Image 1: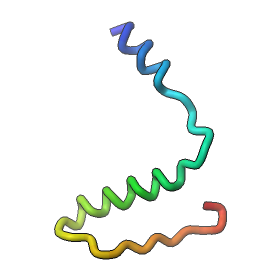
Image 2: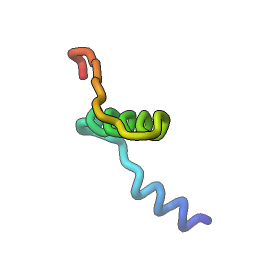
Image 3: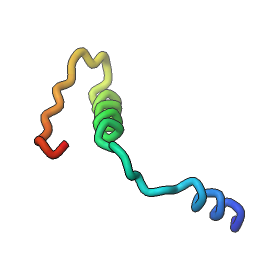
Amino acid sequence: MHILTEIIRKDMVPALGVTEPGAIAFASAKVKTLIGGTLQRLTVAMNSGL
């Protein structure tokens, strides 16, 4: 188990760049799984800080 812990520690690094597009993509994918069927359009509202 110690080897696995070391591998995870080496792979995990803080996000220093733009993470918002990834968060929006993840949220969109989650919405798709929750509504089922075909998603035709998704509107994302965000503030200027994003």
